[in-house]
Length: 314
Image (cartoon, rainbow, N blue to C red; front, top):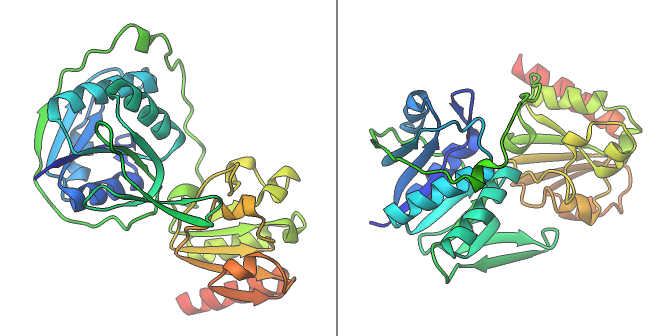
């Protein structure tokens, strides 16, 4: 059986939600091989064993200091040794940088922002603002594929993976850029936007008042997003912008409140599994995209929905 390598995202000794998703994708293609770049991988290995990982390759080093260039070099060396059928990486900003560098080093083709990959290594992408679905495959070298978070449900499958240490050699060039300090993002009680299974976003229709959006999101245990119009107006932080120039999300449920549905916004949430739109304008483009639409004022609709959900939980 062909092996599929995937790079494990982790922070503070905990793997990301996306790491479990990559493990599930890898398992669906062949033997799943996790690559852990960490000076203390024991806790990470334990967490990976919950997702049916067959093998874990660790590489020690000062990875908190090294940049993406060093990670790409490590992956390239492991690729040369393992000869995998494909390499999977999370489609984050850092992940895509590593993937690009790795593709150059290994003289391989690369596919980014895929939402699926099958056993034949044919990927599915949603492009042009979600208006077109593309199926493609790499025909040169080893396929390097970055996968969008929330594209698949991570499947629990306990395993006892074999573990091996790989001695990587980081070149002087890869050490020219180093991380001198890092401050973790301040997290509140809500889930991370790109990893959340439910996202509630507000737009121009909020008139700058995101309280109903936040209350509704909290009742669902959801993340809060915003349209470009809302962030450009200073109503919500740009770190929460969903769209072509913001973050791309693909949750199980996406609620768009007071968002017209411009192509720029649709590009960032088009692949959501279920879309609910709330808008006063019955002609708003977002209503055409929605699975469920409510024509009404969000300041009337959201508080009632929040009360109903809280009551149901009680």
